[in-house]
Image (cartoon, rainbow, N blue to C red; front, side):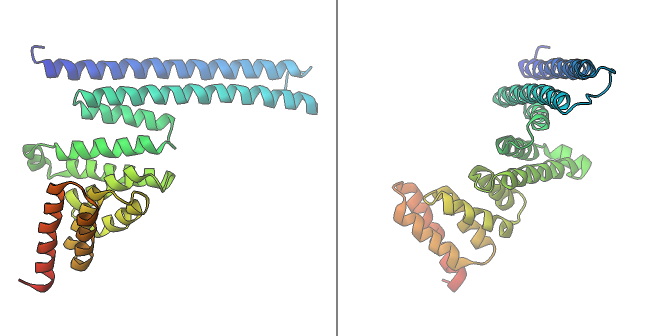
Length: 254
């Protein structure tokens, strides 16, 4: 392969396959070994070779089982971390398709980690935006729409796990305003975001845009006034002033 990008892509794909095979094989081996050990140990606790018949025997069997389960949970958490690291490395190389697959594996091991769902949403959104026009023309935009749907679901899942996870609310709002043309749905997420991150002018600009797009010009003007009053960046102040004039013109004419 003479093209270095193709070489990197192939290397990333092979790394994922290798790690997946190793992790899957190790997990299967551990599970089978644990089952065999547990069955043998429980049988040993009973003189008839069946389940323990005494309360103390049952308690010992339960403790043994719980220890094995905890070990399996710890192994799964580590596997999830490795898939997450692999995804980050692939993103650094611009291999977002393979990074998305690695994140799916990570989520399968630690599904209650909101950061993983946020990263999944971010990568899915990038994949949707980067779809080439000729691909959209041939499949009617179905693949792009699918990635946008996955991005939305991932962000919403992160918020469901942790409703104060501001990065997911911000990512979802950006998706609604700039990609899906659904600004009304972005507004409550941005308002909640700004209750937590009270001086984030980037979020204020996006919320003001959402207000403008939905015809709430007074709301947009109020946000631009807030940005003008708190920002120390002269270029952002000028941008807010220009946007404010546009909102006023839309509201009252000029």
